[in-house]
Amino acid sequence: MVEMTTYDTNNIFAKVMRGEIPNTTVYEDDDVLSFMDIFPQSEGHTLVIPKNTQATNFLDIDPDTLAVLIQRTQKLATAVNNALNPDGIRIIQFNGEAAGQTVFHLHFHIIPAWTGCQMQPHSSNPADAVALQALADKIKVCL
Ligand code: 5GP
Image (cartoon, rainbow, N blue to C red; front, top):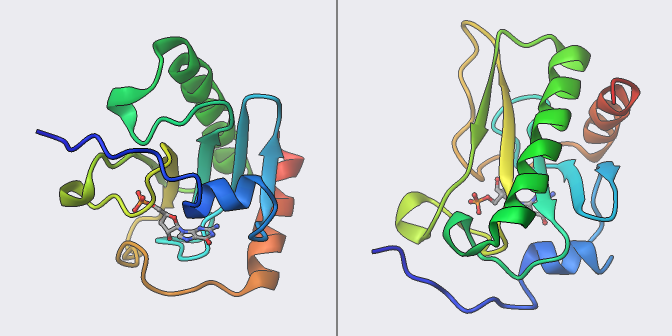
């Protein structure tokens, strides 16, 4: 059974939302924050997190909050698709350490894929900050 960890108000994404850790923002509204993953699995790897919940994973979020989050994730994925023209897009979400989750504030990954290009392993190589900003700017134009 997936362990229901208590929400840690000092998890990385809570700190990002409070502005204690910088992020390369792609989109923000009252409900969600979307920013570039600093260890991207492919060029354009974008994260979407809900702002008004302490859900650690998919199983403990209120369904109405989840509905807004998934709608915003689709909006962001569409912008990534239009901005970067990938051959495919993975929408990924991990629940529990055993599944690969490392940050315990619910989030969706939007990971563009190109035929013949191998993805980086999860949370491996840090991206160049300037390159991340350029990608975020490209995606923002398509929102
Ligand atoms: P999870 O493993 O929990 O599904 O995903 C967490 C994601 O957050 C990973 O893809 C990892 O690369 C990313 N990440 C970890 N720390 C930071 C950070 O400080 N800033 C950003 N933008 N992403 C982070």
